[in-house]
Length: 278
Ligand code: NAP
Image 1: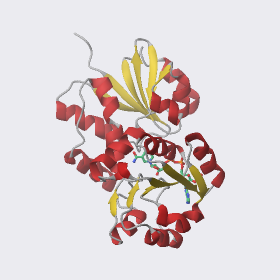
Image 2 (image 1 turned 180 degrees about the vertical axis):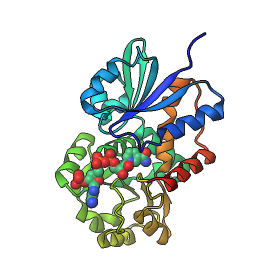
Image 3 (image 1 turned 60 degrees about the vertical axis):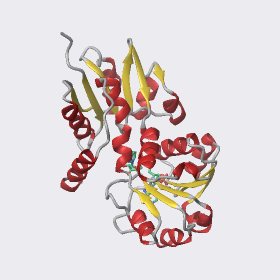
């Protein structure tokens, strides 16, 4: 008899992770033997942790902040998305070879396929923010064939570096209002400000085309100030929770052998968890 597959999520800290809830729900729904556990690993112990995975009986797992770049470097093999994004969030073994993917771009696209029909026809998109998640978003937009991607960021140089890597345009976040009339799709990746949307961003939302689509990858709160302003203007919007749920699908399928569905019950369970926590 073979042992039930064991998977993990690691980060530092990791207590906030909702991945155990997602994978645990799917294991139960599908009636599979298997486990998925949270393991806090500080940066200086990460290489040792990876080295011990097979001996500890793990088939793979997820990696989150601050380990995604270290996981990328540690992999013997990486898929196309991981290579393009330069970070790994999903690990498994091919034989003895530690192999990595980045499933954030897949999660982003799958969420919009489900909740924002027509997004693949966008010719122009603006990405607000230029951090790690923005890299995955820009990769997804390019893969979907969105020709004109503009990255606007508080720190303009960071937007320029990201734009150079993907053949996109870059600017400072103050340029959003003036450029807004040209965008078919808006993607926010900046943390939501509890004080609400900056007045210039409110004006930018007002200046978007009537057919513009707006999404936020931030899902706490579920309706961010940006999404609220866009919805109030009558624009079609999609929140970022589906990205979190869909990015988990490829890993689960690799470790446990069944492709799980992102259903309303799972979405509701994660919303309850967010309401009860942070
Ligand atoms: P990150 O690497 O720290 O980047 C944060 C970005 O936001 C940077 O561009 C930063 O600008 C900008 N920013 C931060 N505070 C700002 C402020 N007060 N005003 C203007 N810009 C500000 O973070 P990340 O990993 O990209 O994650 C970004 C967000 O996406 C997080 O909230 C995360 O939870 C969420 N996320 C969601 C999913 C999902 O599955 N839905 C997946 C990944 C991430 P500077 O460059 O100027 O610092």
